[in-house]
Every structure is written in C-alpha cells, then in structure tokens.
Length: 394
Ligand SMILES: Cc1ncc(COP(=O)(O)O)c(C=O)c1O
View 1 (cartoon, rainbow, N blue to C red):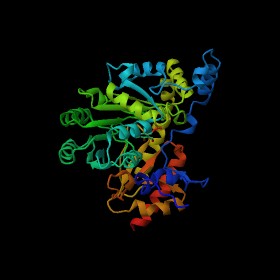
View 2 (cartoon, rainbow, N blue to C red):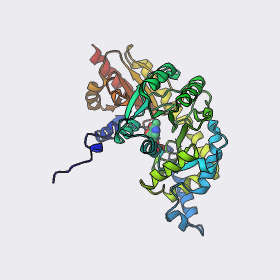
View 3 (cartoon, protein in one colour):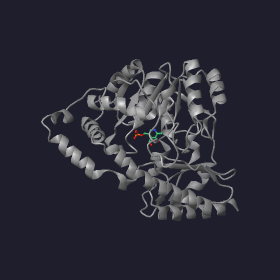
View 4 (cartoon, protein in one colour):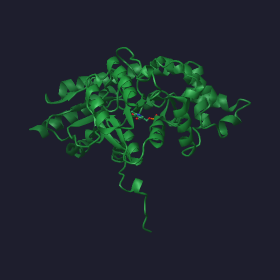
C-alpha cells in the first residue's frame, strides 16, 4: 500500500524531544533531556483518595459520562477566581474553558486563527512543540529577538509591521527552553504593541507556580485592554501531567470559537480528571503540592547551576532561572547538535538547541532539565558533560 498522506502532514518530522526519548532506554542514562515533573512529587495518595471519594458519590455517573465541551462547570467557576493570582480579574465562566493540557490550547488557537502561510511570531528560542503545532496548520513561525528581560519590544514591533502576523506565542514566565522571565515593562509593552496592531497573543504559562526565588510578575493578560490576549495554564507541572487538565482564559467570542474547534478534536476533557482537579483545588491541596515541590526543584536547580560553575569550560554561558524546570546554555563555537550522540554514549542526554529556534539554524545551545535526577546524579552528569565538552574544545 502506498500511503498518500495529506499535504499538511507529508513533510512533517516528529517532535525532536519525543524522538530523543526513544534513545534514552539505557537504564544508567542520566537524562537532562526531559521536561517532566519529578515522579516522586506526583501526589499519588491524594489523587487515589479523591478519585475513590468522587466515584462513591451518588452523582458519580457524571464523572464517567460524556460532559460539556466547555468543561466541568464547578472547575470553570473555580478557575475564574483562581486566575486572580496572575493579576487576571473580571473573569466569568464564559471567559474560561477547560482543555486537555496546555498543548491543546496551542492547537486550538492555531486551528482557529492560522491560515495556510500565516506568520506566527515566537520568541527565539521558544517551546518547540508549539512551533510543531503551528506548522501542522501550515503556519510559519518567525522568531523575535530576546534579551535578559524577555522579548525585544523593538524587534517585536518591527516584525509585526513587516510580517503582519496573525498571532504572537510567548512563554513569559520561566520559559521553555531558557528558564527566563519577562520583566513587567516587557509584559506591558507586549500588551500595548499587539493591541495597537490587532495581533492575537497566546500567553502560555505552565511554569509560574514553580517559583523558588524572587517575586511573581503579573501576566501579559492582566494588561490586556482589548481582548486580544488568551492566557493558558496547566496542572501538568504541579499536580499531574497524566490527568491532562489545563485551562484557557480569554474573550467570550474567542472561547466560543475554541469550543467549536475542541468539539472536533476530543469532544471534552476527561470528566473524571476535571473533577479530580476541582476537588484537589477545593480541598486546598494545590498550594500544598506546590509548596512540597519548590524546595526539591530549588535544590536540584542549585545542584545543576553549581556543578556548571564548577566543571563546565569557561566558554560555556547559561541562565540561572528563578523557577521552572530548565537551564539554557551554550558556547560561541561548539556544535551541540553534533556533540549529542557522543554525550549519549557517555551516558548523559540533553536537548540540543536548534529545534527551539524558528529557523532551526542555531547549533550552539542546549537545554538542560533538572527535575528528573537528584542532586548527586545531576552533579555526576554535568561533570561527564563538562569533561566531554572540554575534549571537544581542545
Ligand atoms: C511551554 C509549554 N507549553 C505547554 C506545554 C504542554 O503541557 P501540557 O499539555 O501537559 O499542559 C509544555 C510542556 O512541556 C510546555 O513546556
């Protein structure tokens, strides 16, 4: 059988990270390649108890039945209040939708706004799976420069004028892959500039709860005056990615359109998962699970950053994030993509940087995740990598 795939899919490669996971089967491999929350932090007992409680309620059938595409109403009501922690106020249930992971918001936004050949601006570098989604809708990601404070507003405005993009996608807090956080001024600037030119913004925030240093910064959405910003956040990195529960908040008309897109995708997010997350929040367990996670990630980030300072060659520079799950580093003249296979042979994996750039050309960077391994393994892995990079630089 010769399969004739759609034009949309025939030239699409797999998501680079998903491909790397296939290489990581060696049991002794130290992987800095993932982006999973730490397995030991997943709240097994709490979720088991809540699931059992829910399934013994008189109305338990509701959780095993089809549900509304918009989401489980008690959870939508709760989220309308919950988002005030990101400075987002005046939210009603019609502004809230529950989705199957933040990934689905990206997918639905592209489905609803991106036509063939439309430009979508992204921070360079950005979350590679978001670009993968844009490309499946035949959108074209174009990179906007980024500095220590986040997106470069001058470059953003120039690119908006030049490319007339449909949308800007950004991860302003503890970005994947860099761990960077945009300043307050940059957030206000993004809201102002995109409103001026009528460009949609998708603000993706899976990581801001994992803050182990510094103060919270209000979301871009909190500065939205004309309804062009959609904010999405997820319970994946805090409660459990396996439950696949996330939400988005935005103008009612946009939410209504996303709902039509979701009807055609998965009808609705698992009712049982939504009810578990709602009960988890109702019992006040969310802040507790986050409070348990923060010292663990702080220690692991510190172990990685210290080991980098101690062992990596002088030429290596990297971010020192205040939260999230990633350190981003690189060299002036070492090809991290070419070095990847050798690193795996030595038992350490990372993600080389090129797939996080819109043009895929930068081969000098790498992303290091610190949530999977404990401090001792992290130190060991960074030392192995550092020795290997020193050899390559000779
Ligand atoms: C920036 C960013 N957005 C979205 C996601 C998707 O998360 P989920 O679909 O599990 O909510 C991830 C996961 O790694 C991410 O890093």
